[in-house]
Length: 113
Image (cartoon, rainbow, N blue to C red; front, top):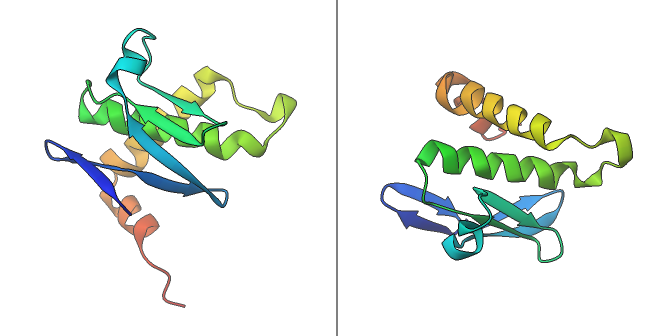
């Protein structure tokens, strides 16, 4: 997987979700006036992030956008609200990536069978 590097943070440039390849971009100007940390374009299949923020905010924002992409197959009342996605992203980030390295190791392990 290709990645960009800013400081010590490598940001991937591609991600596959639901069998679709998405491009991950950094565009400070596009997000500067919107007050957003990130945004997703379903038409262009791109996730755009701002790296002006702390690494944890950028990572949580990417996870947030990935949840939007993953839930795109849901319809109507099944879809999550923006608040639900923000809360879910923050809790998953903490539970998997920050507070429980053994969980991350388990989830990251390659299948051997």
